[in-house]
Structure formats: structure tokens, C-alpha cells
Length: 353
Image (cartoon, rainbow, N blue to C red; front, side):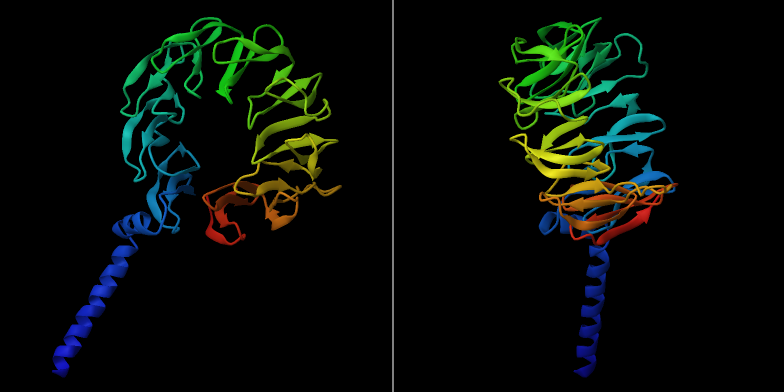
């Protein structure tokens, strides 16, 4: 009886070990993602090749690509191999083989691609099977946004719908994507904004202009930036040296050589004191401290909250935005190594290159 119990115990132990080993490899990763985890994929590098880890910190796509996206959560995304771009899935399998000179992310099932040569008429749009559904007939083109894509069939820009029909006749010297129902365009030397019917709704008054974000757009005149709302009214005067788009209710701005943040009322939310500043993501923003005077060293990157307080101290040579609770960071000025931290600053993937 004792022998039988020992045998059963050994079998149970072996089963438990087998399940543990299985859990730590591919099937285990899949079970984890479908039950308690997420399908996030984070870029990592080894020997200058790109692969991906999951939220468990396990390599799920071995390093093999020349280039790719930094983070994705499903679907298919661009990857580069043999100097050509294609699309892979969350397991690293080619869904659309590497064949394009350049590609964009899919937007509503359609992606802008540049075919083998950049000569006349080589830019078009594919579906998620790789089929060219809008012929490669454009000199230049942008990806789809809010149902429209800016395209340049000859010397002027216009807009097409997802059927490839020209819905806004080409008449612009430059054209940006639609956002918040409006697109930034240039006809002569100045920029303005059109609506979905191609009607100019904010006059072309600006030397530079950016797309709308959260109902607000950055515009420039005589090398100074300001912000306007969708009615064309100013939130602030032309007082900034640089101005970024609004994200999570604030926008990074540069004033007197330093970066800070303003709110949607045009008021300073974080006083400009930083050498560089990125947009907020998941409640935190990467910022770089000022360069030390009379030193060849550079300031370090850390993360602040919306009050401007450091919650992850500045100690990195590179810092990216948070995605799914992780952010990419870098150590070393030359041959920089990159890893990942969580929102507490804990290293979840040690730096590699």
C-alpha cells in the first residue's frame, strides 16, 4: 500500500512538473494569454535582430527581423526582413510576405504600401490578405484616417474613400490626415483646415499647422506656435518655440528653451523646466532633465505625473511611452541597450541590443 502511494505521489509530481514546463513554453503562453494575461507584444533586440516578448517577459517571437513596430496587441503588424516589408501575426508568422518598399499600419482593414520602385504610380492600398484593393497609381499617399486617405495622383493632393473614389478633388500642395473631422491642408504658402466635404472651414493663415487632437490644433506664425479650437478661436497667443499635439488633456510645449505642458484652456499645467518632453501615456510622461552646465554629459530621462512630479526618477539615457503598463528604456550613449520597466520603475526586461 505504501509503495502504491509512493508511485501515485511520484506520478503526481511528474505531472505537475510537466504542466509547469508546458506553462512556461508556447502552449503555456497561449493559455496564460487567453485566461489571465493579455496579447501584448513588446519589441526586444538580440544581436541587432528584432523579436517580441509577452507580458510574462517570455520570448514569443524569436529575434529575426530587421525592423518592426515597438508594441502591438493583436492583429497583423509591419515587419522587415531581407530589406522588404510585410506583415506578421502575434506568433511571428508571415501573413503577408515581405515584398514592399515601405508600409503603414492597418487602419480599418486597409493599409498604405509602397511597391518595389518609388517611380510614378507605385503607391496604393492593400487589404489584410495582401491584395491590392486600390491600385498602386499614386506618386505619394497617406494612410487612411476617419475613412479618408490623402493621395497625390499628379502634382496636387486630394482625398479618396475606401473604394478608391476621389471624394475631394486634388487641389492642395500638401495635405494631412483627417482627425476630429478636419484635415490640415496647404494650397499656396499658408496652411488651413477643411471639413469632410473639402470646404475650407479655417482660413489658410498659418506658416505651419498640425492635425487636430482632442479638438485642439497647434499652429505657427513667424516661428512661434499657438493653439486653436475647431472654430478657429485661439486658446493662447503665439508664444511657444515648439508645440506638440494634445494627449490625455495636455500638450508638451517649448518656451524659453525648456519644455513643459499646457492644458486645454491654454494654461501652463507643468512649468517648462525640461530639456525634452514626450506626450503623456497612461498617466505618465517621459521627460529629460537639463544638460549639466560645462559638461559633455546629457540630462537623464525619467517619468512625471500630470502634476509634474517625478514618479520614476531620471536615470535613463532613453525613455519611451507606456503601453499596456510597460515602457521601453535605454542605458548607454553609444550602442545603447534597451529594456522595459513597469509603472513603478521596476525592470521587467533587462536591457539588450
